[in-house]
Length: 456
Image: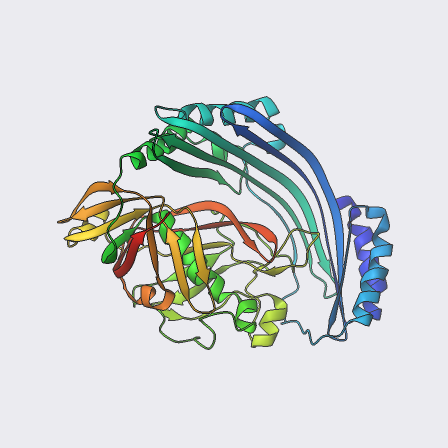
């Protein structure tokens, strides 16, 4: 893709005098996806994606055009200009520094150097390891990508990136004949194949099968207000879903966030510190520059319980009078929108034993199997993957089908203690029909007066 840089520069130079602003994103990538169902390979998809998009801003309106044929760059440039001329808008862009950079995601084992048979073997090992007693079905999804991209704009920014990402996602279903329960897990990272080979795949798969088995003999939960402990995964899901989306500037501007006009207000207890950090190379949501060529950094969203910043693009930042946070994201063929990256609750200083020692009657919630959030009203409901009673400072009987619900701000203010451990999970986030890789997590967390009940 870098060999086409001169063509892109000439295109920018030719169009820039006719419009207020122009940028180009172009990329070429290799990807592999493998689906295994019940220890049998169902699909293997490999391919090369190539594309270029041009975005023009003129008289406050965007013109956007994309092609997978690099020979048509002049054609889509004209299309973008025409669209910007016929549309109306009030778009302005927040100022950002001019950048000239070339970055490569660190990797030990390049994905393109790994034979497809080795990838299939890893998927097979994960599935077989999860197929233990009572497990009646397994599904494994393997996904990897290696891509080279270019971003240039009429302000003088030029960024060339070489990125890689790989993930393995495993689901198991166990049955007692009367009850079916599920286990789920995922591993991977924004790095090379070592993100998987450095893991104990047999242990990873077995743990997921064992989780489904534990749930078969678990009790249904009590309902009411309890002191709870959320594990790393559920802490991350809560932070991502209930808080992270609410700090996205486009939702603020759409009046669809409980956090509108809450800047510099106390929204959580004084020990709550929440961060979104795309520059974290250990996170699945890592990227060095966003879709507008803005360099990423650690963005602290909540400091000592106070909302101190938002996630924004150049356009939404301008409307709110702030700078871009570097969170404009999308694949090349789509218009970038405000998205999270690696979002997490920062760790505290307590051990797990210290978190539970004062709880006489509580619940330990682990993992997540989905839920719902209304960012405008600030109301959420999550379903834990598995749970346990906490009795007199000890984790005891397993529970299943446990739900956690409540008001975002009340729950954040009821965060009573935070563990010293820390873990980032991997996954994908959907918004406005677009999918983006993200990381979310944090430490074990104690929350008082949480509403717990059964879920189906």
